[in-house]
Length: 177
Image 1 (tube, rainbow, N blue to C red):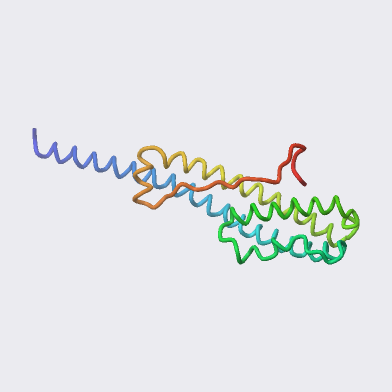
Image 2: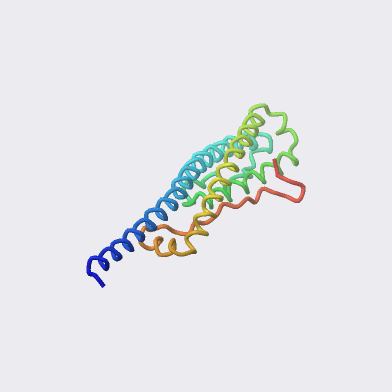
């Protein structure tokens, strides 16, 4: 065989491998960027949700005789490190608020409380959409990372399997709000 032919074949194989790497990297990078954008929206709206829950807590205290039903949720910002954990805890707080609204119906006539509750619902809608966007891209990325050549690339380019957001605010009758 001619030496030039061998060199040409080696270069062609290297070029194909580089193209596969670049295409694979670009695909994973696209998913990662979409997840980062969704996670930014999630974090922003979790902070809004937290602030609304704090405001609603003081309004609930007025109606319920100063009992601090949401005490366990008022210092979450300092205690929880991941958005997924924060999301789960804040959903628990919303479930508790819904229960309190049933138990103390006079809360429902407080205009400020109901304004905050409506805003909480709007924030939750954005969170649901953002979590769905994140989960869809995480699912696609995670599936790719389990296949060749992406599994090799994940080690080189530091792509990792991502956890999903879940929702605990659903009941047998439907959503809690």
